[in-house]
Each structure stands twice: as structure tokens, then as C-alpha cells.
Amino acid sequence: MDDTTIRIVDLYKSFNGQKVLDGINLDVKRGKITVIIGKSGGGKSVLMKHLIGLLKPDSGEIWIDGTEITKLNERELNQVRMKFGMLFQEAALFDSMNVFENVAFPLREHTRLQQKEIKRTVEEKLKAVGLLAFTEKLPSELSGGMKKRVGLARALALDPDIVLFDEPTSALDPVISLTIEDLIKETQTRFQKTYVVISHDIAGMFRIADTVAMLNNGKIVAAGSPYEIKRNGQEAVKEFLKATKIPGFAGGEL
Ligand SMILES: Nc1ncnc2c1ncn2[C@@H]1O[C@H](COP(=O)(O)OP(=O)(O)O)[C@@H](O)[C@H]1O
Ligand SMILES: [Mg+2]
Image 1 (spheres, rainbow, N blue to C red):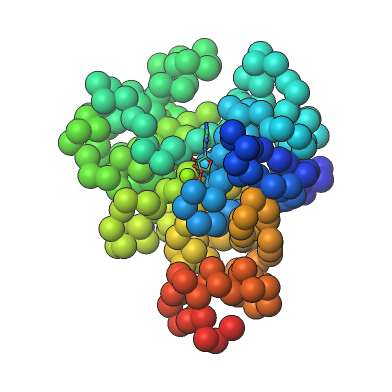
Image 2: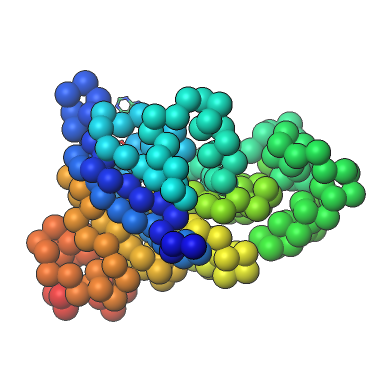
């Protein structure tokens, strides 16, 4: 199989005359962590919504495993969406359901698994995020970092080929951010799925990314390994790295 799982070709999107995506081109490699970084308000969430067909582009194409999705109808899109797990910015747990039921929810919705199988799967995912001891807790009893973990376990529940993360460490303190970054890396290594992470936290994401793609003024201005990005000579890239103070990597060194 081709090692590109998502291919974005000349993607354009404006809202009321405001250009947000201005010709995005990007290949996402299968079984790797691709991080899309860019400033707040720069169109990262808009781009991610296009990947699961929640937004339609003005023009351009998105190929998911050889299927062009921008012209699909809702029924067809739902098929494609089964390939995806999502961790939303606000974890988006069901407040009235305990941890176990939150993770079991997609399994009850989308599979005919028996309770025994559901239990096995939920426990496997909760173990992977270190929350096996918390199955009975309600979201209101959890910290922000723990909610993210539950959200991750739920995103992994259906063994999706591709997991999308929208700002997984925003609104978390630096120490908790580190543990969530590590957990993203660990679960990716364990389950070998394709992870696409969008974030404005460049320093944290450089730790875990296989590929970094930089979104600036509606375009991917650079894509490559963290090493390659750090050595990219473009002004826009240098400016962004300078502004974000990567440890041991102050802008001056570039
Ligand atoms: N549904 C929408 N309608 C109009 N404007 C939108 C919509 N969604 C996003 N935008 C605008 O697009 C720009 C990019 O937003 P977003 O993708 O959320 O940025 P970020 O990079 O922080 O995720 C912002 O100016 C936002 O106001
Ligand atoms: Mg966003």
C-alpha cells in the first residue's frame, strides 16, 4: 500500500471574503505522527474539519486512502468517517456517563459487539491511557488532563486508522501537557495508527512529531522532520520558531 494516507491538493476556503485556506497542499504518511502547526486563528481547525467532511472547500481535493471526499454525500462521508477517531479541543465527554460508558459509547453506537467484547476493548484503551482504575468516575470528578485521556481512549475505541487531535494540550499546565504529549507518542507507537495533530504549541509538538507541517497565511509553507523544519531557511518559518522559544533552540541559533 502507498504510504500516503491523506493527500490534500490545492485546497481553498474563504468565509465571507476572508481567505482562510489559500491553496493547501499536504501529504500525510500512514502510521506516523504529523503535526500541523500555525498561529491561533490561522485556519488549523478549519483544515481539520475538511478532513472529515464537516466543511466543504471552495475548491481543491482531499484524498483519504484513494477516495476523493470533497464531493461525497453524507451517507458516503459517514463511511469515510468510520476511519477516523477525533480528540476534540474540549474533550467533549458526556457529563452524565462515567468513564467506562464514555469510552464504550462509540462501540455501542457503531458495532454489534457483545458486552464482554465491549468491556475488553474499553479496558484495553483505558489501560493504554493509564485510567483503568477510574472507570466509575464521572467527568466532573476528573482533572483536565484526565478528561483528555478519556477523550483519547474514546477516540481509539473503534481502532480507527487515523486519529485527529485538535489542540490536545491547550488549556493544560506545562507538566500535564508533557504527559499528554508522551501519551500521544506512546499510544501511536503501541497501536501504529496515523495521527494528525494540530497545535500552536510548537515546542511540545516537536518532541513527538515525525513530520511537522507549518501553516502560515493559508498555505503549508514548510513540511518535514522537526530537524528539517528547524533548519528551514524561510523567513515565515524562522519568525514562527523565534516567537515560540523552543528550549535550546532560540531563534538566534537558526
Ligand atoms: N464556520 C465559520 N464561519 C466563518 N468563519 C469561520 C468559521 N470557522 C472558522 N472561521 C474563521 O476562520 C479563521 C480560522 O479559524 P480556525 O481554523 O478556528 O483557526 P485555528 O488555527 O486557531 O484553529 C478564523 O478567522 C475564524 O474566525
Ligand atoms: Mg483551532
